[in-house]
Length: 81
Image 1: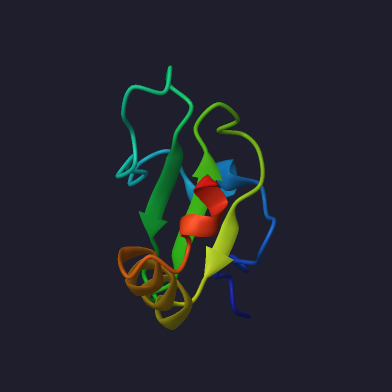
Image 2: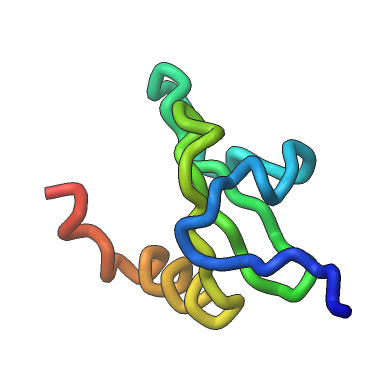
């Protein structure tokens, strides 16, 4: 029987544990940050720091890498307008 925990989009982030979460995008925003965790299989989990018990969004390595590259290239600037 496979006893590994199924990791899925929208799962309670607490089920991923409390260790390993990082705030790479924190700043002077009053503590409202996006937290990220690299999962053992290479995927990335994101959660809202003000709701650490809330859902985790799970992205593949390719998805998160594509997003970061696009953001660096200005493709997400429309989110700031």
